[in-house]
Image (cartoon, rainbow over all chains, first blue to last red; front, top):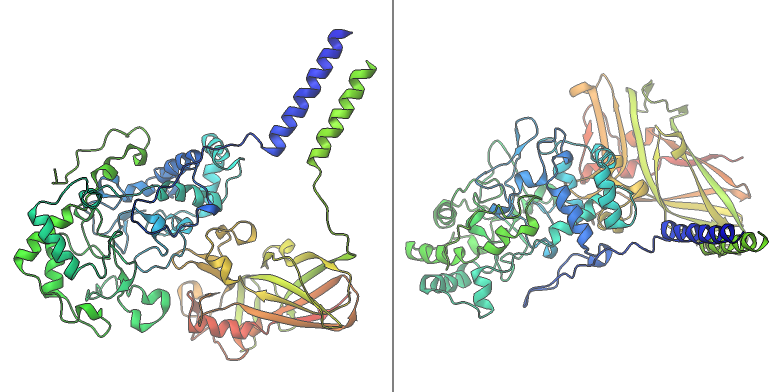
Length: 357
Length: 243
């Protein structure tokens, strides 16, 4: 009888315990990750309280970022067009390749320091980082998939059910969790360790051309490409006439305001040496062609930025020094950071091409 | 054996007690159900069946969806009771979606009001769940924001691919805000727990202004046309039958 009694008591304890664990989920304790704001930087725009960073959330976001299943035919992951060695731009591509031999209509920008950004895309049409992945996933000339199908594929995958549970506490897979997980990965892609940053922290010093370039930069570029983000996130018309096939009117499409015609977001210049081609449609294949645009080829329009109505005077000497400075914005730690590489390729990063010592 | 089974039930009870949810409200309340009925003029809307609209065009309606939210009721003394904020996607294709229920205070309801669309807060707060999940096809991914209401169909008169007309009405920013506040008076002293609301699709084409499917077959972004359509259909609701 004693044995039966013991078994009974043990059984009751086990049932009670299991009940608590499964219903209350009190053993769901993901490992929190602290988001570090680099010294001297503004506070991020992203509301972390709605999506607290965890190791599990990051791991899930990273898997999703590199998973072709998010596209219709399995060929196009986010990472296919956002490549780490190009600071997550489409390296050496003016436009990116999409489903069924299509091309995008805009240049894929580098992805970093997104926690500080409030509006996404060249026209700022997307108002929250969590929402951003839905645009390329559903665009016919990008990943061409429906949200419904993506969720269906993820739900059918045992590994994903496990990862969603680890990140969110249960196996529910929905659009919101998909967006939050992707944000967990994207938010942690902070690029703040370029030579410029080291100089600012007093850990390194500019060589002469870099220093001269920095002085010129502070006179001629910094009012739009403001430090430390190297963008003020505004939308400006810099005298780039519309491509006659793309007919992209930029910010005007979002605001319906003719005054916003051909305005595009000021891109960050961090990692700029790696993010060519430049411009919203990737029409400038080199830094030199960007300088040529500003000093010569610009088409000044009625709503061209007031700072550029007379174009921008730049001597060959200045261009040389500016280029030297811009190269100090390359963050080789970020370009090689194994945390952001696809799983299995952590140590595959090529040697950085930056020129500073 | 007696002790273990007692212990078992004691612990089982204890476990169960931990799971009981708190029920708070002790005020007298009742269940209010609102049924939405979709019509074209006086004819019931049947998806895919030809019907002549108010402008004399023969049309086939294939999709008719809209969001309603932020409900409140007013009693005969003018006291307004805001109901818990909830969002509903009313979809002609989904019968269940056309009846929605609330717990309301047990008062005689004089007026019911709700927002046709999704308030701006929800348009700028990232990805939502439930009725507001972007997977329902009522969200613009390229220009963040909800499609407040959607009417799609075809007509031989429309010169476009598939003779289709598609009205996706959205926009929440100042000057382009397509949400509309709807206020409906109920017949005096309504005690019933069910309200039937009729939505007349004809109003999309003729309300404050006339919108002709031949001249204007497409609306796919916030702006002047979306505002015109929203003004038009803001008068589509009426209470038409009370049980």
